[in-house]
Amino acid sequence: MPRLFTALEIPDAIAEALARHQCGLRGARWIERSDLHITLRFLGDVDEDVAESFHAGLVEARSRPPLDVTLPGLDAFGGDKPRAIIASVKPDSELLDLQEEHERIARAAGAEPERRKFTPHVTLARLNRRDTQAADVAEYLAATGLFPTLRFSATRVALFSARESRGGGPYVVEAAYPLG
Image (tube, rainbow, N blue to C red; front, top):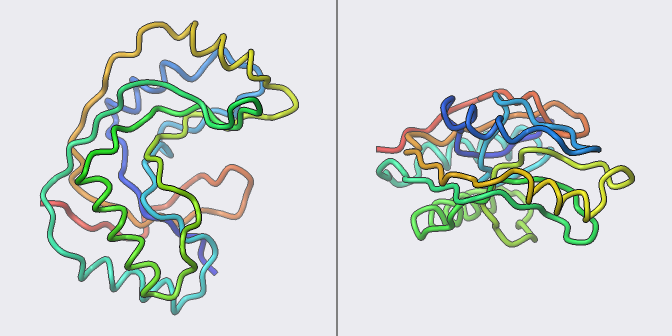
C-alpha cells in the first residue's frame, strides 16, 4: 500500500533560505531541503484502488492559475510539548480552496476524512520530546533573528509517496498536476 500525500513543492531558492534556519536546536531532526513541502492532503497508507481513484480525481480537478504563496515567519507546533519547527504559510483563500478541493477528492476516492484542521506550513524539523523543551524552542525562535517574508509562485501540485519510516522522507513525486 502506498503512503501518499499531495503538496506544493518548495522552489530551490526558498528551500535554501529556509535551510539557513535549520541549526542550533538540540533534539531537532532537520528535514532535508529536497523534502520541504506544504502538505495539502495527507492520505497515509491507502490501497491501490483509492490511490488510483485519488489520482484520477486530481487529473480531473478544475484548472487553477499559479498560486502565490507567502511564508511570513517561523513558529512551532506543540506548545508546552513542542513537536515541530515550522515556517508558517499565509492561509489565503486560494490556498484554502485548493486544500478543500483535495479533501473532497480524497473522500470521493474512499479515503477517511481528515480530522485535523488545515494549518498550512513547511515542517523544518521534527523534535525529540525528551531532548527539546518549550524553553529551548522559545530560545531558538528568538535567536533566529529577523525572518524575511518569503514568497513564491506554485506552478504545480505534486502527489508524493513516502517510505515507511519515522519522519517520512525521502519523498518521491509520483505525479504532478500543473497550475495555470
